[in-house]
Length: 98
Image (cartoon, rainbow, N blue to C red; front, side):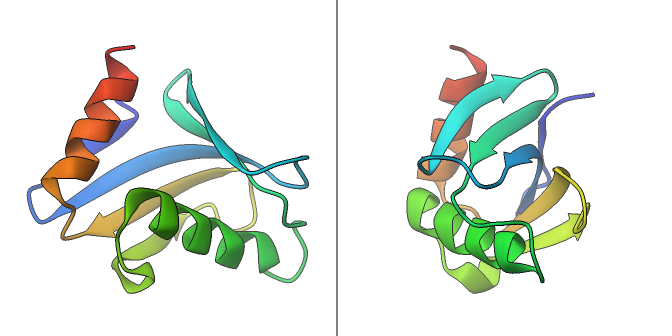
């Protein structure tokens, strides 16, 4: 299963989130998921909100264009990015190609 799918008007991205990290960052690919470290604790949805905010800033997309499709209570999450830019597609492909 690919770690991300380009559906034209949106992207589906599999992520593996590590909450309570020492610092925020996108670590690269881990199996069939993009590993993301965030400082927020996994309490009362804080990590999910922080993840959306962090990725929106990193990928230069509006927060409203990101949502969690599945995995809200786990580390493995499927995200949807609506109306992705060509720059974002290129960044994701560069991760895949090393």
